[in-house]
Length: 427
Length: 94
Image 1 (spheres, rainbow over the protein chains, first blue to last red):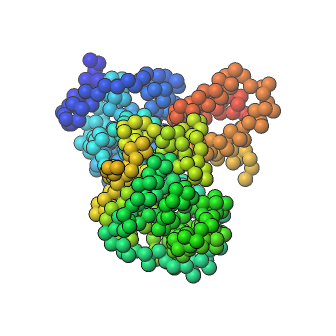
Image 2 (cartoon, rainbow over the protein chains, first blue to last red):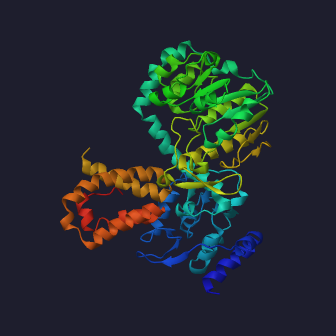
Image 3 (cartoon, helix red, strand yellow):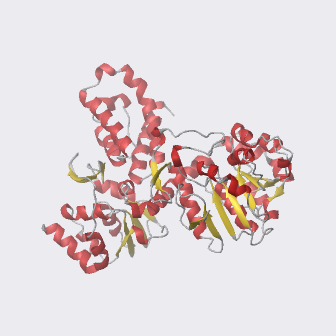
């Protein structure tokens, strides 16, 4: 055993014997190579460089800059070659540094060639395995490449880190979108005259709700939904409305938060007297033509997004949770109306069977293989294609479910992305 | 803002975003950099060396496999000294 490796292992064994036991028993088929593609050595894991090969210290300093200057504690997701913990430990204000390993096999391999003994032996350091983490902690930073090579047991926490890192940019894009701001402003008349969604809150205590997304697996459950007991209520997202109606299902509520005029107009262009009584719950970013065209009652709501700051002063109690997916406010509507049980249909957050939406939905198509950027586990433990935004929506819903332990959530299809906090409906 | 300055800002944004794990933001900025580069590449094709072509291919391959830190390294340290880099004449923000 080399000097570096033995020193690393000695510290791990002394400080975290159980954790070291787990790490040392890790097997993996990762292709790990020591490389020197620049002035500095690094490791590639399945072809991905774990750090800069030109200036690791400068890179680590940039990554550490996400932790506020005088923070007394910090969370590091993925330690890379140790440069990031090392930079943070130079700060005297840091009293607790929590380091979460996102890939045990990679860490094990790095112990051979890279000296981690300095930061591992610092008493301020607390080492964790990703699988022991059920929530994200802050303030956080990451040795970014570790996010790319996170092992299966670290995928959830990895997704949450990616989402957290992306949030400032996503919010900025929305906030600076003049078209969206104008569309909200043009809906002032609707804001003033429409009913507030808060009027629906607590109106259906202890009810069971079916919340319907437009994912491909919805097509397997039309009969089940149609055969529902009379006291079960159906909330549908806008894109699922026509497929539901075409299969004889009349939702009790429809939710829309999409600003795109033509798309939502097509979703909701229903020529049916029956639909005239179904309320539309909408965010004021929905285009005015769509709102004008809707035959049934309308209830206005908004989220915590800064773009609704002015509207929120007018309708302060009519907030619905949203982190980008219309399924979020649809679920929150059910919960705020008093749901005791929520069953999810078409909440796929992925592309089961290589389809993008339920058959009959406006943009239903076969998946373009080039669009596959990421994967999630489905209820059968299989990898199913997804997209970064869908994974983000999934993790946000999981966090929402974790924050609402008084409601039971159930998922319909094992072919769709597994949703933590739900069990499966026995059909 | 001039195209050149905007490209330099976009390049800096790509490098920083990729190093921070902000892949989406980095990829959007990278698309803008490529959009700036392509017409200039076509104009100056004859001046490009084999090393430049290799660099372009490496960057494209690295981006495809999600090797974002290596893309950042190539943009920050290899591009400025290449013939390709002279097409940008870009000054990176520090």
